[in-house]
Length: 125
Image 1 (cartoon, rainbow, N blue to C red):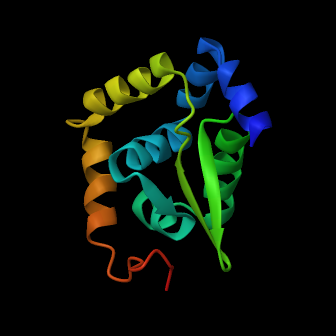
Image 2 (cartoon, one colour; image 1 turned 180 degrees about the horizontal axis):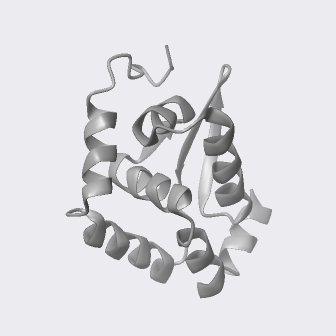
């Protein structure tokens, strides 16, 4: 854990902006900011993308220490790293505020909210 905190303390603007420069990573981060924690299956459904693509981008965000992952059985849940510097968290919040009225964000969020087999008790069906 100390390695993760150390790396977050070295978060740079370049690293964070690079993470936001890819549409899949940006859309994933905005949903994570909104929902706090999501399973890969929820992101796959909401973004209408294949699991390997979502997982690859989430792994990249994890490697940049922007998100944390948690394994529950065979499922992996992602959340925004609570150890992000305040300025980085503020930037993500501002990005979410700017996304609220975007068509793509509205579609992603609606699709997530309408997911028929959305995990209850935080375990994917």
